[in-house]
Image (cartoon, helix red, strand yellow):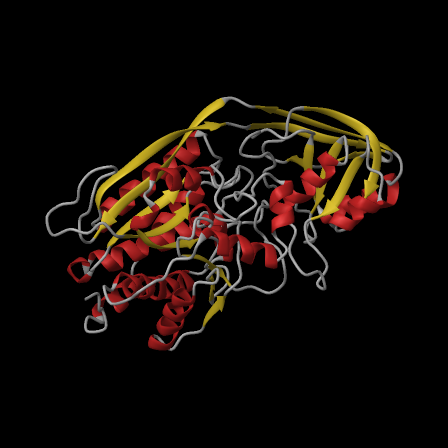
Length: 460
């Protein structure tokens, strides 16, 4: 039985551990961790070694091919002078000239009511508070593309002269259709004032080479089958996945997104390695590559993994900046109950949200009915805050939060690993219906991310 309650020493050891924070410092100091580039590879190697140092076995990197994207210069030529911007990853190279149309929030109705054919479309990075759902950047981009826009400007709603980044493109067509750039709130305001209705030119210079990424992983607990193989005598076929993503956008340190999540799972590995004999279920730690360009690493891993063997996935992405853990539980009542048990056990607030969240590495598993958490940090307001900007830096995070959250997450994983903890799966059709009910399906269809057929089954 996986019960750590009689072994309280691990809590103090975790709360005084430097392993996670040291890894976090190493990751941010690598600089550019963009998918398919040398910094991402260095990050994967560092995580692999950190998992081995924690006491995990079979630490390795499993590689996969990737559509690469390497940043060059970007610019905006507008009435009143040139304006600063940055290219959005997987924008195609090229130049687009057209009338600038400011669509405000860029809601679907805004595109329906405005002619954007041949024009440059500028939209906000957020939605109004009264709007029923968040609209992802890629949905706004493809609304612009499908309505004939010549170019796309993504305007940050957070002040501070911070142009936002974030990828475009789809799984089937990784490089987008029209040039796309991010502009700060302040540049967006100037463009709105000076250039709305006027001719503006956007230029993107970039390279799109073939590249290689990978997933760093290691294991604790009962041994089980290798991929496609038989388990060891006395072992188990079942496993828990504890995951993060090691890549980050090339413009920033990627401290919160997602150095923090990766540091957290390494601390959990340290805590559980000290108590490995208590684990009833195998725990596999995975730091995915290429999350920021379309959940590529987790999608590869989901294809390689027998879903029937996955008891649950605990995916940690962009925590630590908020002190209280926030867990999307995707309608899995057993996951909500487990999170609430851990909060009660440690007398520590834990926020659970039953809704679907299709925007991180748990999703390639959850969409197939595998129970899964999206673990982040509870913050005020909508959007990413400092995330996806130059300002996602280490000094905004606190080691206290990392340690507290590692204790809670280790307790949560131990609870799920208990042989007496049952976690019911869902039919993919039920997941599809829940996504439809949240009005998320329309956007996923726009971006090519809808995985279901008309009956709610996963499309082949």
